[in-house]
Image 1 (cartoon, helix red, strand yellow):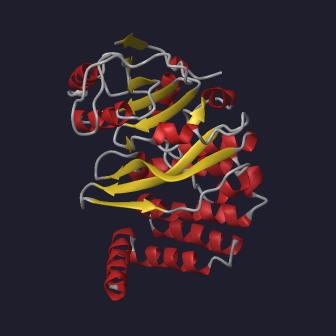
Image 2 (cartoon, helix red, strand yellow):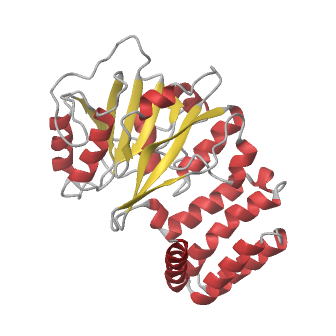
Length: 344
């Protein structure tokens, strides 16, 4: 059963279609065209209007026609831009299902709200500062080649907004029952990446509202414990890197999320030292920023003791502890720049 927040108000409304660059007409979103309905769920929190509209436009620009757009506004009541965001989204798409929390309840609660109102057989979640490529829905639907498949994902384009650079992370993708591999490496990535079968997400309980970070990873783990997944080897979503608000840049929330993952799946991590190491070693920069060197170093010793063969990563994290996070990251960026010049 999905968690549903109290104090929820929602309204329906719709105009469309806008590409990522220009308006190309005003028509209603089709509700039945002989193809399965896909619910696109955008969750937003205190985000500037143009960024939210960028996400909305990327949904409206999908080549797959049978999509319902749901926007869940989880902004703070005091957020001055809240009314402007809602009005702008409604002008852009009159048929949007626009849901508002009366008070901020967090990203997981917002996604569960959207899920509970979704009518689609499939659902796709989109963070308000990310984008979908136009063919994402159409291509990922083709990945559901078996009734058992719960999730289809793809490669991700990482966009550095401040440097105006974009790179595709050509990760090794995996299909089938990938739970054990996923414990070691989150190849699915961001919430904005996959297309999911709604009934499967509901069957595992939706998003865990107690997770302050790693929220998507936790859901992927629960899904892959029960269902197979598939992938489309193409870059179909954009993940924007910027200095604005993101859970991944909040040290305390990152600590909460990683430690909760280790606790929830302790039975499985106890049987796989390398998986435990790869998850635990990620805590070190956050421990440094929140608790200082002593606790970070204690964790480092635990990681090395548990998995002594991971020499390179252990050395890098020790260097980070000695130098500090900022100095280490600056040195790392310089080393990468030098390597690129030598290659050229």
